Image (cartoon, rainbow, N blue to C red; front, side, top):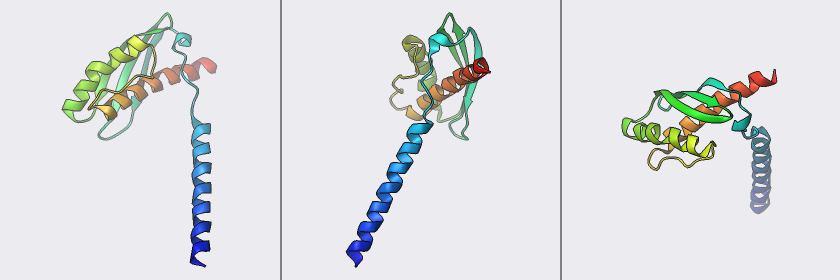
Length: 128
């Protein structure tokens, strides 16, 4: 009887895991086409008591030309590494699919997300 109960619980948990994975896949937004972003300056941020970031992103002729970190929270040594390297990585790649700075992963990912949020705001206003 215990074996049957355990088997039923395993099947139910597996079902919940698959359903949750499908929901996450459905919620993924489409990738940003930087070449389609209109010229301008856009602001984006991420929230977080310890990891929040605010950025200003400048786009000219379908390319990101400047990323300025206006505000960044986090451990000073880690965030300094990310602030120093991430804007250049994104600009060089013209993509948000860049590697995080080793030792500053959370700060790096927050910078990427803030840039994405800035560009997505522009996309929304363009569609309306």
